[in-house]
Image (cartoon, rainbow, N blue to C red; front, top):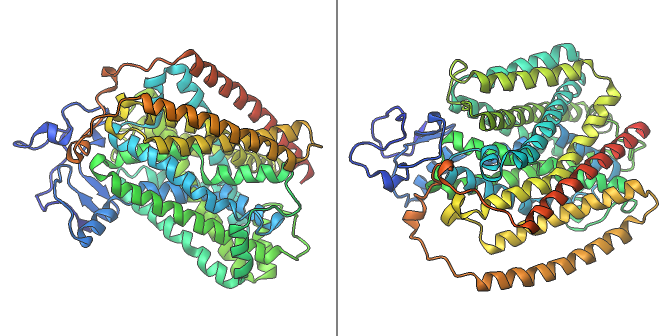
Length: 565
């Protein structure tokens, strides 16, 4: 195991987080910390190395930088690969079976969305030392905390249920009864998570990440055409034209690749891993690497399924992921069907582990309870009990629910994530522009512009879905063009207004890099809560009302598809 520290004798983390004697507290930003759980202070103990808590060594050689990156590696790549879960595999397979590779172009466009959203989370976790749910509650109050975190709990629980649906479908291909597969998977998840060792848990997760690359031999078996793949990758379009159903699937692809739970998971996991501002550049690299791996795996799944079903009688007739495995077995070979089922099982397990943990972290934040993988079950009963309860209830639903109900959950939950993502991103933007919270680490103006673009495009997609659900005869292409033109005008007007605000704002004095790397958020009770203007309150209430309506219409659309499937 690599030790990227200075070689000093190992010591247990100090309960107060204070540096060793003779080391200046201010130098390491530990004098006043917002961290509540003492387990979040100490050495970084990653799957592939250790970094000492008060490491001040300069990494000049590429070898030292690589060893440091290996020790940091984890939160970014786990959250990204974890989002290629059972619902993700099912959604990519549905897109490929029903539309060939004509929706493949959506995936490369999601790389900047993934990187921009999660980079903001990286800074929040490392600089504040607290989870996303707690920051929202403390900075905006319980009402808006319930707005954001309440949506997360509902969405996450439905997502966890889809993971056990994936376990059921993947092992049913091999003839294993769900009465056996689902309980065993539930027990394995609890045992893996409640080990009391962050490093042990992270190593388990890297086993799943490595298994994610089984898409490579699967692609070798299916021989997808390179020309069709690259054309689908760069040329936007939809087989049969844009319809409300294809828009729903596009939103589902967005929601399964960039989901709200990722914000909560990565921020809390960074805090739990004890990553501080000094290591932000390495965690950014971890996040970028994870986004590339995620899009690569998703692209391979779509290429494999499209190669097997385009021109086949089953093209356009997606049923579920198990049926895709049987279709691959029939058209490509039994090895392809078996590999797809193993990939689905792997995706289900890493997804369940990540999403359930994100929810347990958020519960710990909201209720002020200990919530760290460094703690044993005895030390953090509430944390592990919530994890176990969610796993058991989700598994039980899969065992007792009918196939049609499970199909509706799988169909709707990914699109629901896409519909709720703008709300989660808005709160993320507010936090990342809060100087009381991030100090010198607040967003740059260009980053705010990109994030606003992401939110507005997602809102337009959900508006198209809502309009075509209420008025099925609307022309989706004309509607999209009209909304896109209106959005372009908003960009121009908003851009000019934002430029004027920036010109009138006095520039912040530059902060030396060494001091910036040590800056951390003070305890939350010392910060003044931001006061929202009337305009911002109106905008937030309008967003809330819109999301409620969008979710209702999404449920209607999911039921329509479930009835006709």
